[in-house]
Amino acid sequence: MSVTHEEPELIQLLTPTGELREHPDYPLDIGDEEMRGLYRDLVLVRRLDTEAVALQRHGELGLWASLLGQEAAQIGSSRAMRPNDMAFPSYREHGVAWCRGIEPRNILALFRGVTNGGWDPHEHNFHLYTIVIGSQTLHATGYAMGIQRDGELGEDGSAVIVYFGDGATSQGDTNEAFNYAAITNAPVVFFCQNNQWAISEPSERQTRVPLYQRAAGFGFPGLRIDGNDVFASLAVTRAVLQQAREGQGPTLVEAFTYRMGAHTTSDDPTRYRVTAELEEWKRKDPILRLRTFLTNNGIADDTFFATVDDEAEKLGETVRADCHSLPEPSPLDIFRDVYAEPNIHIDRQRAEFADYLASFEGADAEGGQ
Ligand SMILES: Cc1ncc(C[n+]2csc(CCOP(=O)(O)OP(=O)(O)O)c2C)c(N)n1
Ligand SMILES: [Mg+2]
Image (cartoon, rainbow, N blue to C red):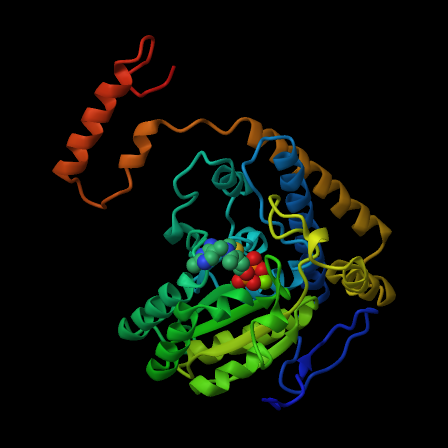
């Protein structure tokens, strides 16, 4: 059976060669300072990512999921958030974490396996990383329904943004979340980073229609943006978050991008994809095009770029040093976050486990050696 569908329409404000295009519905409306700030964010999160990959290669992290190539999708959309909005990430959202003020060392702790969570979701309105594909779309929809019920909608109200991949759109959870958000008109932005791969499964084997068109079937708008264009990501997300805050319900944003690295450090993409594809996407690099734009329009000069490069080097050093000095957790920490309130069963299990640990010669009460 052949299926016909409309040709995908891509919202793009900054072309791969660094030219700015006006869009009637999505004005960019930011000043030079903010543009330089976006460039700085992009470079710093890429440096953080490169350092984390190197740390994993040195055996300092158990695993790392690289965001290489997806920086613009993440930075633009998260700089569109206000502090009182809530974000639900997947496991690759280091750029979003960065913009929400999560310390890189806390992300590293997670991938080093020395924390049971990483951060307090309420402190930065940034939920914990979620590995179970698509499940965070339901958490986000429920949270957005809570915002509605707490009467927090309005021009200065709050909204929710949830990040997930192309592969997650094949999950039942994601489709249930789409439906629930639609029928309840929940203030949630579904931000799908279509990096065109779900590990080794290409997106053309996951869907017969462009992903953003799925939203129409659930009864809410869907848009496709150039995910390597930080301006489009910012302008579009800002607009749809505001619509959500004002009670106009959910939107699906499909950020069309490309995962330039491996799925994770445990994966070898040369086994399932051709180099030519990667080379093509290198020419669409999100950082390169913004640098060209800033240079050609006299918004940033060599001194600015050199300062950002220096800052990136320092961040790399800090991340490395922080990783080496992350404390080992106590085995008893596992009992700490099970319930919000004290619980006699957990207390008893904790005490039994503490006795067991203490039974080893030379062990201290906290299980350390
Ligand atoms: C429910 C569930 N099924 C399978 C997996 C194994 N798994 C981990 S990542 C992944 C691919 C996800 O692809 P996508 O949603 O496109 O996200 P990306 O990694 O490309 O950012 C799979 C199948 C999982 N973590 N959870
Ligand atoms: Mg993917």
